[in-house]
Amino acid sequence: MGEILVVVDHVDGVVRKTTHELLTLARRLGEPSAVFFGDGADGLGEAAGTSLREYGAEKIYVVAGAEFADYLVVPKVDALGVLVQQVSPTAVLIPSSAEGKEIAGRLAVRTESGLITDAVDVQAGDDGPRTTQSVFAGGFTVQSKVVHGTPIITVKPNAVTPERADGAGAVETVDVAVPESSRTAAVVERRPRAATGRPELTEASIVVSGGRGTGGDFAPVEAFADALGAAVGASRAAVDSGWYPHSYQVGQTGKTVSPQLYVANGISGAIQHRAGMQTSKTIVAVNKDSEAPIFDLVDFGVVGDLHKVLPAATDQINARKG
Amino acid sequence: MKIVVCVKYCPDATADRSFAADRTVDRVGVDGVLSELDEYAVEQALQVKESGDPETTEVVAVTVGPEVARAALLKSLQMGADAGVHVLDDAVHGSDAVATSLILAKAVEAQAADLVICGMASTDGSMSVVPAMLAERLGLPQVTFASELTVDGDTVRARRDGDVATEIVEAAGRVLISVTDQANEPRYPSFKGIMAAKKKPVESLTLADLGIDAALVGAGSAWTAVEAIEARPPRAAGTVVVDEDGSGAGALVEFLAAQKFI
Image 1 (tube, rainbow over the protein chains, first blue to last red):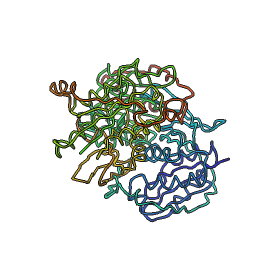
Image 2 (image 1 turned 45 degrees about the horizontal axis):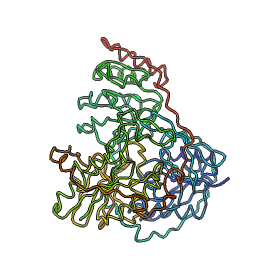
Image 3 (image 1 turned 120 degrees about the horizontal axis):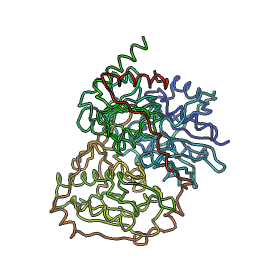
Image 4 (image 1 turned 180 degrees about the vertical axis):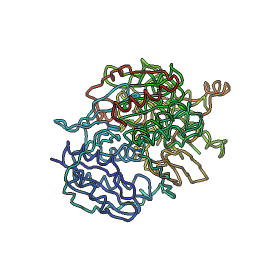
């Protein structure tokens, strides 16, 4: 079986759940080889190595150097281009983040390979991976394959439940000379997002969102989210009103989420919002307007004022948890 | 200074979007518009022009697509772009993102632009990859997903909001930019703008005009193949209750408990 390169997503050496998902998918296609870009000049930390082996990485390619963090996208493409040439992988799997998709796009051009983005499932096929995508705001599912070069596939969070498997995780250091021409868009400042203590939006198994109906008060939404151990999201209307930061926006121009449970509060359910949450497994809505289109999507809905319903529900949940 | 804005004609997101028999996006049978996200790119170009030297700056909108795609150029011109370029060739039909970036690269190259500005994604394919591919082909620094952008002389500076951090990115010289919907507030075309657009030049180019081998683009040369498309089955109608004297919260908690979320 050929190698499947998996680009590792990590924050300061802590491997993110999306990487475990990619390693799980990679095992369907071949032998997973993780590609780890060191932050700054650091190599692979012990915790990261353990985490990758626990999810089946047979090899871990470590690419370290300050340039991979100091310049946008291109140095990572340089390194992956070298690896694709050296290893001739069966496929390359990359997380569907903004950066991940840009890396994938450039790598596809550089290696003359077909590219599929935002896969929600990847299966082995007779002549290469078969992907499933959800398009037009979740209105259609599309099955595709790459027919030229090395299949390069970006995969959405929550595409699969991560499964553990022992991997040898043999470490190989990759030396890449990053040319001056790749050091053009410099990251001059990086501000980590303040920790909220809640799960990351795209990774969370439960997302509780607020919209126009909050009237700007997200406290009931946040308290309800915390009772459920959920991430908090916001509609574009709430973000545009300045009530919640853009990084929490769910929808076409924000994050796409596909949790087990999505709770929309005071959100009417315009197509742009549906594009970001329609593939959630279970959908619940609380809205004053019984005619709101969000009720067409729900498994369960409450026509009522979120400022009354949510605090009461929060109290009941907390009471049950004792 | 010359600024090229890449714009796309997409089916209206609020219309009943669908696919044609050959499994490509139906761009003819469904009402289309300038991709909403490209309005931010056009607006950004106009702001760069207006805050710099408007007399010597030209904004050229470039699109690749069928005859109807001219509407995307027209809207850009109505907003204030100075000229349009339409790559119009039957052989383009069915091109994937890789081929689209090749065509755009040739069209942009022919313009000798100082800045190239794109939207963050199209509203149909929503891949978000063409700006990066274009930068790769043109050998330009990419300052992409800008949620805030300033152009100061030779230097482009942008705020890029990632999943876990916000980055400030800088590049100098000729740069390729993509902007998000946070970057600005696109203007509506004024009556004056709508009238003026009728007189603005739109150049129509074929693949041959751009020196592109037609065998490299189109559905037959795509490096990906769609094997099946299925309309998602409508969700089964759920239960909706009306909150009366606090009954809603109880019903909600019962539902969540029954589904094992609590």
